[in-house]
Length: 139
Image (cartoon, rainbow, N blue to C red; front, side, top):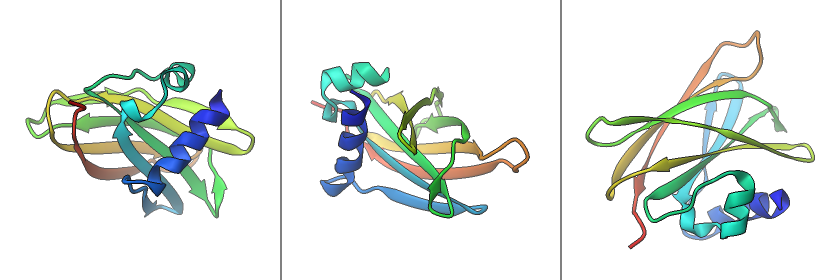
């Protein structure tokens, strides 16, 4: 089940969605956002994600020197009205790969700002990744 989720998340950037990459503090953070309806219902449920016309999904993978990092993530999403909602990340591990996914909601179309604090290990300084994405609710 998780293998299917990861495969679907990896294939999404090949379509209309573009995976983004941010380099910060020796880390490479791959991030992507998409409408939750792109996931099959059983895959979303298996990962603990909610599907719906106003639900999106953000995915992140943290790497150092080309290898996955099992980091601690804390994040939030803010809409254009400055309404902020915390992101509750779910850790997914498949073999050596480690991914983090979280749901977010948006009542209407608009630009969303994401901020994710990443701690790669207990002794590492916290790194902050910021990105934004236009959200288009399913009609």
